[in-house]
Length: 349
Image 1 (tube, rainbow, N blue to C red):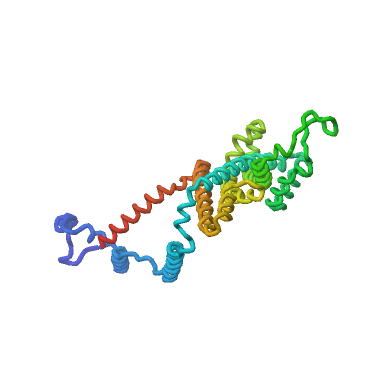
Image 2: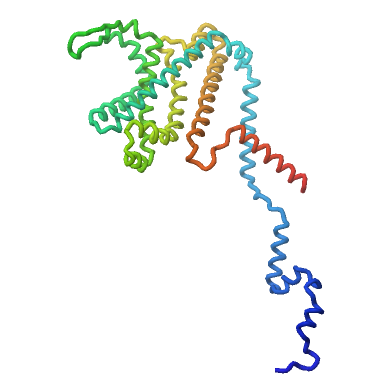
């Protein structure tokens, strides 16, 4: 098929007259696109060049302002209300009487926590055992101690010598080898620790049992298939995984135990609350500052326990999460870095 005269151009001539260097690369690419595609691409570039703004949320800003105003009013009231008597608060905060009561509170809480945790583990294992007698006794104990108020338990133990004047060790229903005077053994500290420990064991048993049941059944089956002994299986496989669930729940119980130590005042043990109560009876005008002293010390104790809880949970989270939760110091550094980056972006604009 012949071309019309004057329109025939050889391939070599076209290549010489229009070399690739005569056209920009973008023009060569755009030449193969339709007009609609070029328009869409231009619109996309202009949209990308624009700054993306976060949506405006007026409700959030209004709620934030209201909360800040309420907090500011509360702090202002604490600082300016003369009824709080902050000078007397400073006087009583580190008095030897208060510190002695604080040491008794720590001692009672520590001993009761150990006793309660050990008793809770034993009761939880009894609830999970195959023996119907152990299951029944454990369930009855947990049911009874969770049903009876703690103050009743403490007062009952405080008057235990009225029911059993002596305690003995010997053959059941037979002769006694050793006899003890219960009134001499049951000191105020002993009654407080045993009462709080028995009550704590009932709650700790359910916490431990729930943590053990949270471990996947396949872990038990795999350990059994390997022929591992029961105690080794529980200590090395089940318990480390159960502690991830036990820790936060038991720390809640521990915080409640620290606050429950204020009830030992009713069994004649002068703990932190008891010391403040005694000083309040001697100095009636300082009741409010003394209550504030007790409040601040309890806040300090529970805050320390919460910090320990965070690091214990972080320790047992290894291997269960891809990244460990950041510590408060790491959060602060990340926040400062983000703030500096945001300030730089604002300055650049």
